[in-house]
Image 1: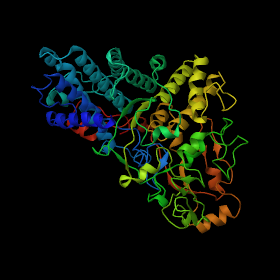
Image 2: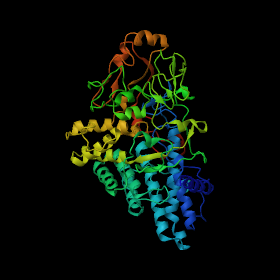
Image 3: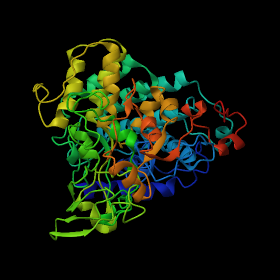
Image 4: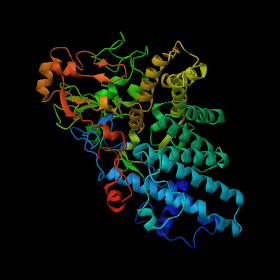
Length: 567
């Protein structure tokens, strides 16, 4: 089924590229005067909107670093982390350009579908395809508004001259347009398809909830998220760790995804974050900041929980910790993982023999700098096909919707049992139990707005780690300044120094728990001051980066385009 979906979408991409190869400017549309005259042509046009490049995540993917500090590529930092983001950044230009391509192509479908109806196309099928175009147009504008704020609102086909003179539309108008577009889509789209992966009613409602959450429109977010829940067709994947693996396809938890295919080149290469004993590079690695954010099995942060042992830091932690980061000493894909500087050999369980441990820096300089390696989304299937994998690109899933509903209701201070149930459903899944089994996991019970807000934010970070969601969470919570003032830490190097200062004093892995502040963020400065950790890199922050800069090319060619403050 997945192969057929890819073939269908891929063929639409190839053929529609020819129709739109005149997109010289993001606001310009190519010549398509003879297109959109049949049901097939409309379908191919809509299929093009599912192109992988039109659906970027808010990080750089499973095999690279991110923008908020959940993963780090040794000492390398993104422009966002070094506060040097500007209008020439490739990510900035690509997001603007690609989303306006989506808008232009969706506009063409919405404006010209009548041609197909006039030629006898099925009205029900055309209406559904047009609803998909409204969905994609809404998603494109939501991505743009979330990053840039006010952007030009284009509903019609325009020529290049008009496009070059358009200014930015007020954000309030863009917001309402997006909400209306999602409503138009959700009213027509089916709840599911047979043998296809396409936009659904649930997807339109879920993305509406997400955008409303980003905009601080809590009532809209709560209503849309509740509508998704009330559809009754989504459920949490039974095992959290399995959900993200390459062979888990089209889970009932996935509300909207972009299918991948090695055969058609829609894939990612996982070699980077794999341990070096498996032929990987041991980077990018989960950061100590992320590692410290997972609470203990009593639901308390590690600096106050009596269950936390800094010398055995995976013990008594929320199960998602060891499902996302490889525990020390674990048989991971057939080989023991151990970054300890004295573990010069480890067990190869496939051969039953001890082998040289290239995952300790005592043997391999470029092994994980901080001792951590990623586990989420990785299993032995990642070793095939030259480390190329094709897991579903999950854009939004049911657990996110449950937490969005809870957050919106918390911000409205409308905390009732449905809020606690939504949060407990997500947390209980991590422990492999039903939410009613409150004696088997640390259930949420507080109805105090301040307390539950903090707990919700920590829960989102644990549940959605390394999925490209945390960036916008920190942006909308206005926590970027605090996060970006923190350093990236690693183990002491060379290994002889690590043995002398940490191992021989009984302070492996950490000498004590880092302090966790009121926002769930870790502070390692005392461990650094004690000489037990080293700094990989120092992040910087500029308040202007709460919004991205308008691309430099747009500023140069459009005299009516106004730049965001500070750029």
